[in-house]
Image (cartoon, rainbow, N blue to C red; front, side, top):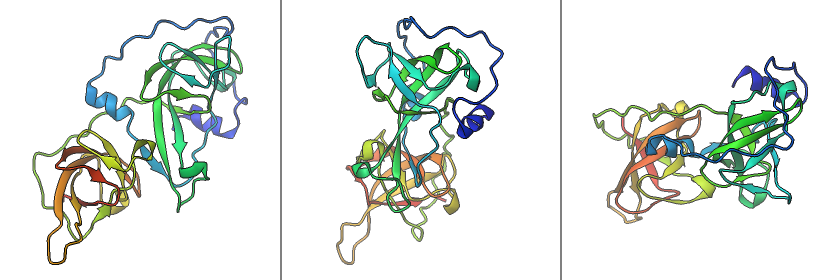
Length: 258
């Protein structure tokens, strides 16, 4: 996290005035949306999900839009308001991810009921006042919504994947959990979350084999597909599916090639 974000964790609305010119946020019109010139795999990676076992801090949020009527859903070309401004160090040109936590039934996030973090897109600050800002939507993975929380934007990179294919560690199976929008079925090119992370020896670029137990006695597990770790947390990882012989599903086994 940046120093700015740590400061905002303490209290939105408290901080030093940034030494940048502030553009008043009133009576602003959004510039026309433009295409994001990024490779397709990198653009997909910006939208990949992750998992959380506790509610993340949300000091920065999208609080509305700039229309003559009330809207809660926004797309590229819209202006959205942010609940912080120059008093919090916000500057024109800064970029942030817009994200939301998805939990079954809207319940609280707990270790036994983890949430999926859905990346809605990312935004760029367009105009600032001392206590509020306006931003444009640079790219939308999904619709950006009022209440989405913001985190500092950093363009991801696809991890390097070794051309070698080590044997799968069959004594250390993990499981597929969920994906974006709490999806439970996946195919080639999709992102899914598994219950193996850096605590289990996973690193970015690590290769996995996906297996299915067909529950047939005295038979092998069926080799269902392949995946690569693109985001690694201590207890979970986000995998990019590179091969699927059939639909991969929550509960299927994964084995790290190592």
